[in-house]
Image 1: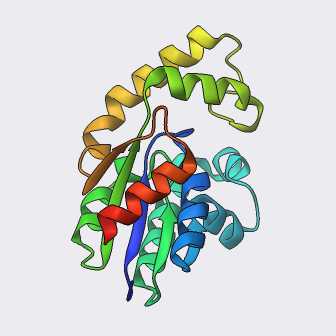
Image 2 (image 1 turned 90 degrees about the horizontal axis):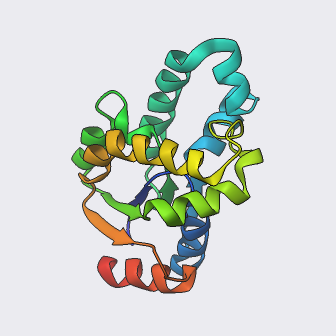
Length: 176
C-alpha cells in the first residue's frame, strides 16, 4: 500500500465512515474521518463550529485539515464530509494527489433517506425535518448540486443493496 491515501467521497449516510473503518482494518492502515479530525483540532463539535464561527470559517478549516492529512507520509483511508468535495477546489486538489485514490460511494435517494431518517437526530442538517418525504426532497436537491463534484472521483461504487463486507471487497479488488 506504500503511501496510498484512499479517499471516500459521498453524501451523508452513504457509508463512508462505516466502510472506511472496515476497509482500514482489512488493509492494516489507519482510518481517519475528516469531520473527527476537524473536531479534534478545534476541540468542539462541527455543529458548534457552524453556530459560533459560521460556515465560511468551517470550510476554511476543513480545507486546511484536508491538506494536512494528505501531506502525511503514511497510507490511510480518509472519509470526507459530504460537502468537502464541493467547496473551493477541494475535488481538484484531491485528484492532483499522486498518492490518492478517490472513491464515490453512491447510494440512491431512497437508500439515503431511509438511513438518514433513522438517524436524523444525530444529523444537524436534517434534524428539523419530520417526514421521510421532506428528507427525500432535501437529499434530492443536495445531490443535484453535489453530484457533479462527486462524479469526478476516480472510482464510483454503488452501495445500494450491498453489505459493508461486499463493498470492502469491491474496493480492495480495485486497489489491487
